[in-house]
Length: 325
Figure 1 (cartoon, rainbow, N blue to C red):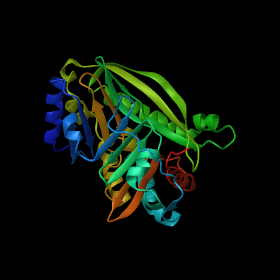
Figure 2 (cartoon, rainbow, N blue to C red; figure 1 turned 90 degrees about the horizontal axis):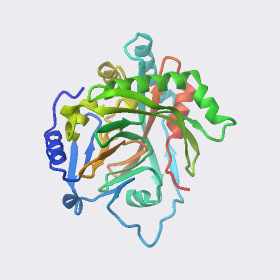
Figure 3 (cartoon, rainbow, N blue to C red; figure 1 turned 135 degrees about the vertical axis):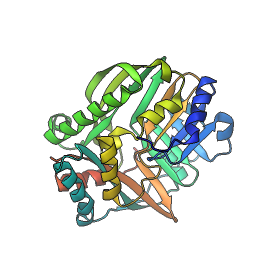
Figure 4 (cartoon, rainbow, N blue to C red; figure 1 turned 45 degrees about the horizontal axis):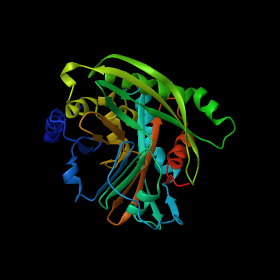
């Protein structure tokens, strides 16, 4: 999928072979990569909170989120790109396309303060440029095995029987099945004995704005010998992340770039931590970025031929939140 190989992938392989811990951040198109050893992180302006690594201490005074206002585009504006995606789906150019938008937001907090108060499996602050609080694992490598956890399908948790509705919704099931199949095929490029370990798990995500249920699965494999100790080569083979792109990847990427009308940049890229032995990484979603002094929240969802305009527009808005509770 990646046409030009960034030199940082080779350095990631070298650091992995030498068992030197490092943090990496790769943008959506693998055009920009941040790569930092522990020593290099100290003056980088990057704060990280991962399940097995963090490099900061909480301040004594915890800021409070008192203002968080979103200014989403109109449904009519959203519809322009949505219609282009649907036309391509009906032509058979894609089976699933992840369509995202950027929404201006206003808040009383700085990006750093949002980083401190938000609660998520993965959090990163990159200088004063962006912050994200992602619930979605991309791939993990542990003891020669590789795992991926595609997350696809969300619903308002306040709806009666929401979890069951999510698991049995025809559109959401089709979307989830497609992503699981795509990620299983992707993993087969770097691993043998690939199998689905857990299917359609429902996770509860608590936020102040709106509680959500999200649907995930787990896929595993045994790394092929040529990929052992090569974090960069693994990432180069698997990116862009299928759960935030769609299938098939090459044509769907064309559709995404035509439909969205803005550059995702770091949004829906991946970042990770290699501890000297094992690696954990996430998809950079639930994402706020500062552009010319204005804050934008980037969000979206998977579109299939079964998708309904009103539902997809609402899902894009539902995902604009800070996980504070």
